[in-house]
Length: 335
Image 1 (cartoon, rainbow, N blue to C red):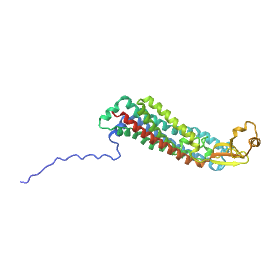
Image 2: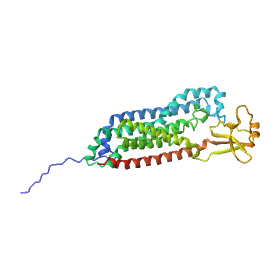
Image 3: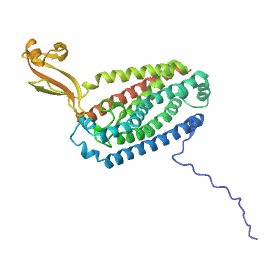
Image 4: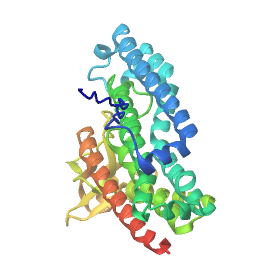
């Protein structure tokens, strides 16, 4: 007799996606899922709105033939031609407020990391439960920072890229009063680097205070201090251009960032034009101060991108330093 062996079929084990979050990262996403869903919807709406704005800017500029009208005309084009003035007035508010949103999203990312993401859990004491579930402190902090960092790298990068695309849609003189040095924190790599620095400062502030509101206040102060300091040293990050002339130079209308205008004495000393006083002619001012030339220190528009990448590199370095300090501070919380 032949024995027939029967076996009970087993259900196949479901395969996990390689890109699906697991472990403590998944738990962090579950904790903040409502906030993250709202942020995702707002991001999609903002990206759609920026894409539409860039399309309308380009289309309207072509319909009005503003590119040819203002070619080489500088900022005086807007004063001479009413279509250019109408164009700036029509798109001024949209470009301005979108730029402010892109500029201040990094600060919001830092405040979100400092308060709801890290400090709230430290304040409530639930972090102790996580650490007793075989989750080491370093992994806990890494998971807490992974979510805002990914949001920054994806969301803020897309927003900054689309806003820069809108900003470069038309000649600079057609932009509504937003020259590159006034919109520095809105363009190129700056919003992304700002946001990474804000997230790292927020994590450090949360670990230092372990309270939600103080952590957010400390993040605000630290972020504002960093931005103010970088704004002060920004003109010196890249060599400035100096133009020397016998007559007093005028201010260029091609988007040049003028830093200083003054006189050069025969001994080579620099004197600011403020020493001339009110109502004194340039010729008399030169003679009074034993000077024979005028100088103009400035950054031409071509210096925008070197300055932006240098400042962004400094911000990323500060972010790495703050993240390292947060990891070191974490050791104080380990029982």
